[in-house]
Image (tube, rainbow, N blue to C red; front, side, top):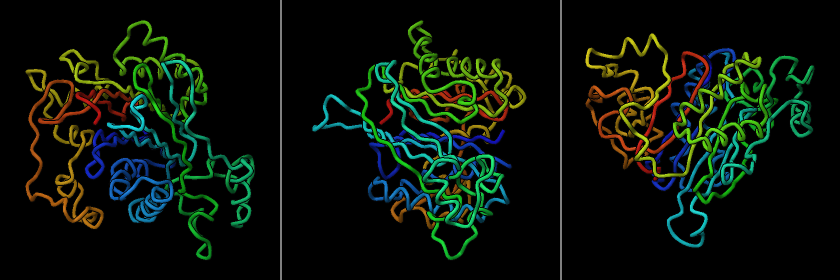
Length: 357
């Protein structure tokens, strides 16, 4: 499984913002996992979330990624959700900014029905992409960069970024994101972020329609809906990795329940549960819970210290986790209703509780 994802429901330095990111790897999973673990740190270090600032953060992350992978790469789509507490938008409490690198997708369903596409695919045959590839000395054959790579923007893939005379945004393949913004009134609106494994079978309209119908049928568990959607794709010819996130703009405190459905790999789940039915697998929780900034250094080492604001500080003790029910929520965490799913066995999903921001 080469996909990876991340959700941070309250950014450290931008507490009115939530972050959701999905990364679809190719030729390996190192790039996608690194981006899932670290891209949000580069973004959170920004003073302001402007397209130009975010572009710079993505290029810095891509530059640093080179020290952590071999030859693989990944697409990436991420959403920054700002909760607007005060006027001038009392009737539109959510600002949405989506950044996209590659061919994963984001889409908003207004009132659960009206589709608003929030990303455009970056393919080598697109006129703007094609021109950049040719101008860099590359070629496009069979709608692939140099006859090989099927996307024209990606994190990693450094063999397509090897022209020292060119800027990062001028290389045949670049990690520069495009941006689309939107507003949400909350209510029945929902946001979907997914990889191209679903799009190969279903278009944006069909994905939104499927989720809307399930919600209208009073299926309130987003994990179940996400799993059913992946099953639909797999049963209709889908052969690629399939990952998606469904985000509702609601108070999620009522979502957490002892019988919550959590789709996780069977073998890993069985190895993580004790006789009382509680998970005792710190690494499992560690990989998929929201690490606070003090724990980041403990888990990932001193190499990223330069990315952390001076005032963040850190502790020298190893994070301690308690045994928790099957919902897989670490002690003391407070998170909102969001669910993600995958058809592959290496993608874990975690139910969340409490308001988004």
